Length: 373
Image 1 (spheres, rainbow, N blue to C red):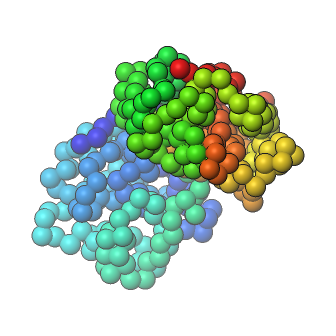
Image 2: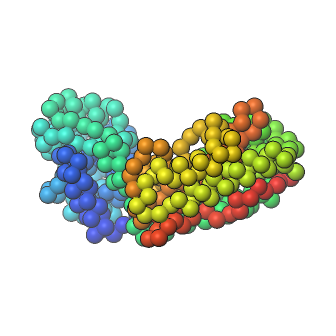
Image 3: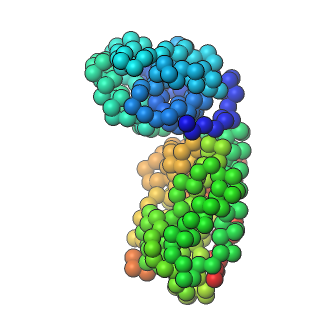
């Protein structure tokens, strides 16, 4: 069973639950349904094993929250950090837990439900309470976990510093003649050595593979002159890290230097656009403008950033059309890139938080083009 200590206190969990109920009401909903995953961890400090048995937290405005759990897991739920004040309702194998849940729900209600909810559970809830409606939590309550408190910010900062230490060490590792998977394994090992519980992704894209933003890592042998994109991160004390740097094996070509400098300037422009009240899309626009004016606009093929916290990708998103204003405590990536098919790619990524008067980076390694052996 995966566990970590939440930075929230009992009072903090109670505040989160109250705020969630109020947000649901403001959205015209009856409440929020959290299944095992980041929403349940955030609202109740409970991180059970995800399986076919129904575990469901029901949060509704002006009502005590109710947690429906399998009887064999009730003890774990009672010991969780955020379940004090939560009404626990258990069920035994052979019972119909969806009927139990249906008895707690507003029979004509409409609820936000965790994105991570299994289709099995949603469909069975629909069977047991056919008049109840459901909408994805990210659609209905996108800002549920977006603004971090001081304890959360501390964990994100620590995870970012650990990722930075990993990058500093990987620069000392030989690249030429090794496979991408070898460098990826080094990154995963170093993340764990610097305190990460998990290394969730280690993208290593060398040469033409770097032009695929989500390449992963393959068996390609890295050669002298290759530009190598490294995008890596995981979780540390429950909160995520995510950073990208691009290096060159040996002396870079003039073209590689040019493209990397454009991306570096774009990343800086995106960071400088971060201020309270600024629309998320304006961060994307600031970074994209630099790349477009340099003639590479068609080669920047993804949004500029995504939120991060208990999950590596969560709202808010730095993308055209996202009018959500930035608020102090929001945390997200700023990661423009240029991808030249058949040749190479460049991406630079930092995690940034919104402060009272601007932005603060959680990744602080050099953004200049580094050479490795």
